[in-house]
Length: 480
Ligand code: NAD
Image (cartoon, rainbow, N blue to C red; front, side, top):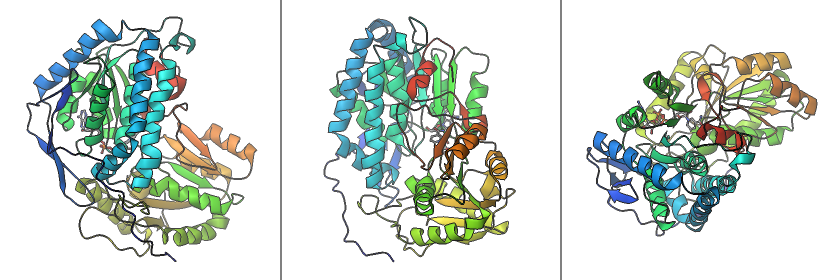
């Protein structure tokens, strides 16, 4: 049963949301020339602020500022001096962590306990980690004098707004590049707060530029002839369009795209721990996680036990106000995303899978989706093949390890996988056979700046994080 906890809302008094925001170009907030748009709180549908939209002239100005900063200051600076700026940014992010966390939960809809305990600390950790590399690049295995690429165009999605910014900006700056970053149109606020942090850290003007806007702004940025590197995280469809767009140019590219990860539970697994791992794998961040364990592959002889325990556990999850510290499941980030989840789950029912959700009250306002499990799923079902990007788990079964590998790899994606078993030898055997960039064993959704992250097949290419991630911003072959 679920106990009724007293509400424990985090105060919003720490954030100071302005009524409108400009672009951040050459170290200054600058009016945009496109049509401004609104960002809303997905839990309440209230407008939070009006946001500038960058047009072609703004893209040109931001890329010119990044080029000038690259030529005149950043590429001339020693690695240890660059590192000092990164350390300073990391420390300011820690000092302002609560402000970042509250703002992220308001703009994105994710539970405050996740933005407070995962997103913001990890974002700061990425800056600390890369600050340490800035003066040691000649020892990273990329030759004795590795050189930066120049200006990086970076485009990120809405599911981990500040964390994805950190994954992009920290390695680019550590390796001596300057950046123009475009946050997603539904979650621009923490990137704009980060721009203030750059000012506070006295980062030389033009080293970081933030352009807000929709897909068209991103397209113009990717296309700009003075961009040397494109780093994109988002959907596979847009990633493929970008790849076509820059074909024939010498722009370097990394793509971090979608996923449909298998979380594989063997009959010798510690079932209670596996249940926590399954819940963390697919219901963390409302399932808006590229590497979410959205396909549960469970050994047939323990399937009933696992599904029963899972249903019991889901009945204890709390859905509601993202700013309440007790909340486990927050709001879906946008109406569009909610509609996509509704469409795909409807296809699951139409194709004959069995749907289950716990009883939970859905708030009147905002975008919400109850945690959902589908059983009787076959590999042909759309819900087993397509990324839902919501709190929806598709359960399939297997009998032998070979069958588990076969089913896990039967996907166009290859971002992550999870294995639950008490046998180390089986973990190693499986990890060798799974076509996934990250394989977690007896855990799921663990992130660390020292570990490279990235995909196979339609999940993209290139690695972010770790020593491998540095290669994506240097004039060397990426060893990953
Ligand atoms: P999306 O591709 O629609 O948007 C991502 C970003 O690209 C946004 O900033 C958007 O404005 C921009 N964009 C849209 N069209 C563009 C174009 N033609 N040119 C340049 N930029 C363009 O994806 P989304 O719905 O925001 O994010 C969800 C997707 O992101 C999911 O598929 C998820 O798996 C993926 N994702 C992957 C990772 C990873 O590391 N692999 C991490 C997070 C999210």
